[in-house]
Amino acid sequence: MSSESTDTLDAKNRHESYAIDYKDQIERDILIAMKKPTPLFWIGLGISLLFVFWGAVSWATQIRDGLGVAHINNPVGWGAYITDFVFWVGIAHSGTLISAVLYLFRAKFRSRFNRSAEAMTIFAVMTAGLFPLIHLGRVWFFYWLFPYPNQRYLWVNFRSPLIWDVFAVSTYFTVSAIFWYVGMIPDLAIVRRFKTGVLRKLFDALSLGWTGTFKQWQHYNQLYKFLAAFATPLVISVHSVVSWDFAMSVIPGWHTTIFAPYFVAGAIFSGTAMVITLVVPMRKMFRLEKYISIDDFDKLAKILLFTSMIVGYAYIVEYTLAFWSGNVFEAAQFIYRSIGDYAFFYWLMITCNVFIPLTLFINKLRRNITYLFILSLFVNIGMWFERFNIIVMSLAHDYDPYNWGFYIPSWVEIGITLGSFGWFFTFFLIFAKTLPIISMTELKEEVE
Amino acid sequence: MIKYSFQDKKKFMDKLKDVYESGLSPKKVRVILPHPDHDVEHLVEEYLPKSKLKYFTLVGALAGCILGFGFTAFTVLDWPLITGGKPLLSWPTFVVIAFELTILLGAIVSFGGFLFLAKMPDFQGILTPEDHGNEYVIQIESEDKK
Image (tube, rainbow over all chains, first blue to last red; front, side):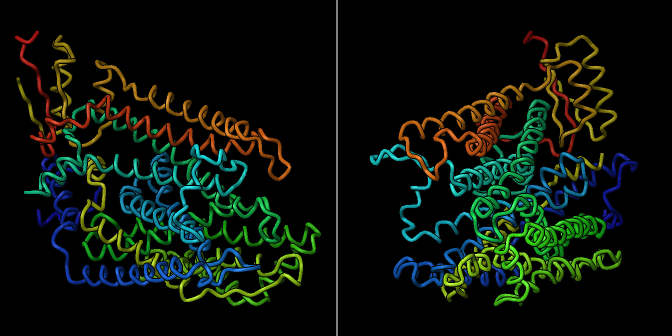
């Protein structure tokens, strides 16, 4: 076996004994990640939990003292919280792209990333889902968002994009969770073989008694295909709905027809960057170089470059629409964006999302893992500021100069924002240690 | 129970073909695979029916769509409150809710259908898991059960 350990997966024409050995090897290699955590893991988890704690203290302060501790007020009533919401929903999208869209297109390299990208989707939606609640003045009434018979005889307003959001995001979470779990059932059945004691019982239960009979695989394949087919339009609808939270209003810079495709492309762009941010250290830490090759990263980098160009094009179209329309308020908003109070963040966004990703046209840089990792961090920063710029600049500078204002987040808002990163990474780190991080079944399928 | 185990897919498929062609009822043949395989799927589906999961998906999706339009229409008629000068029955805005519920119920009912058709959770399988590693297995029920 040792002599074969450096081989890649292109094993179609190899000897039969190799195939069976290789399948066993896949199981051992992937399950190494589930062994006892290293000190590095504990340090990572500790830092993440520290951020969660900071976020929790900040939110507790806001619940105790009221929304006044946040700097959102007139005219900027949506600030860091809604920025965080849109950012995290966006991050989620790439998971679905990789798991569902690339599945339907039969892109083989997806099997290296789909499990961790799907996990990322779920944790990102869980993070995003917190922000509308954090944004509420009285969070304990969050259930008013849902339509249920009540003594006031009132129903929610189904004509409001905010209610569409409730349905879109909760559907997205549910469908992504089902998709993730279903894809994992055969792998959970493999994991149970390697466990003892209570963990063995737990994985026995989680794998639902999976045996791998033809009938199970037959229905499983059908279900997976249907879920992928459902998730694909869903992912487009979710960020379109998020974009309509803005586009359905009359605020300059928001009320534009380009928002839905612009947001969807941006979401896939930022999500792909986050996949790179997560998978590069994971690959190194768990020695998965054999399974996640430079070629696979190269393909991710091409998705990143492609979506970056769509996003860059959308930025140009936004400007063109504003000036072409002849609407002075629209034009004034876009002049304000590039030379106004927040111009630094605007140009930071352009640099991170448009200029830096252009370097990915260079083959060598696309295949340089360290470079990709650093670039992905820039894209994450750029995409957070994209949402900040859209939300804050439009509200700070609308129609009436008397109404103009300036907003910077308070320590509570910054604390909750950083806490959300801690919350997300905590879940991801726990996932990486407790569940199979690459789909073993799909890798085995490729051997044949 | 007769059991054949193979490490090689080709040998397994040859044997499986022989078993099916021997005139034995295909329902008495239990096939176990380490991973999904299209070649095996094509072969077995010559003798066994295809998955009926699609009917569950269709029913779930249709139910979600009807619920989406029906529920939104019901709520605005139940308490007729004009907002934003829009008609009570603003169908285009209800499309979003109907679309989301189509997908939500379609996915949930499909998952339920999968569990039903694949007979999962299999409590016997949870208590005493059956594991064949990475082997291809053919199990044939004994003739006296006929």
